[in-house]
Length: 314
Image (cartoon, rainbow, N blue to C red; front, top):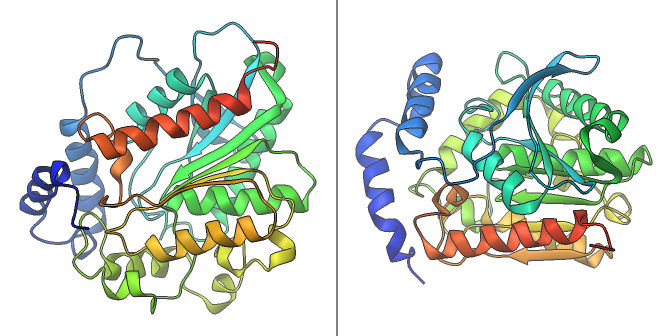
């Protein structure tokens, strides 16, 4: 199968806008250009778009943006981690995504402005994520959330953080209702076929992903830690994890590791919904309104979330 034809115009525009790969630019220029390009491509706010409220929370004083759906019933809470290789991206770059998820899933969403690499390397973002998750649990009642219906979610590097936090929650006996991993980066094995075939992949190349890992977790010690590299978790660490919604993209260096992690979770007895993303490219959740494939998986993700956060009597 080739790239979904509905995505070709978007891919061509991206390649024209970025003739020099972002990681070859000065870092602050890349971050600024990324934010501006995302803002320019963002669709007009839909009817019922939820506006977020910025807060600083937890012992580590982490900035978050809270989105509250209009439903009155006590529902679930979702802690979301944006993508960007731990280096670029922000709460603002993902504002429309997290606002839509809150509206369409019924979750109260907390989008986390975690510290970025290389200024802050592993484990800072991971520790901040746990700090926010624990804060959310303590304040669930005042946020209108059932504390038994807390979930983590994220795309790409945010999927890495979500998978790592799901592992840590099991280790600390913190109950999670689910984990959503959108084309997550989970391993540092760059010899997989999807890495070898991904040197010219749209939106994220193999070289770029290797560069991201060098910024976030360059040391051998970090790369041996399952909270940095979730694929390092052994089968006993995976057993008993929260239910997972995992999706990958066919044209993405991260395809093979995402598929393997979903298979390992399932083999360990975890309830897994896996969407392989045929014909899709990395970052496709942004294209949910312009292409049928991304739109379908986005709706299925929201349905999956809704099933886990809606009270049984509703």
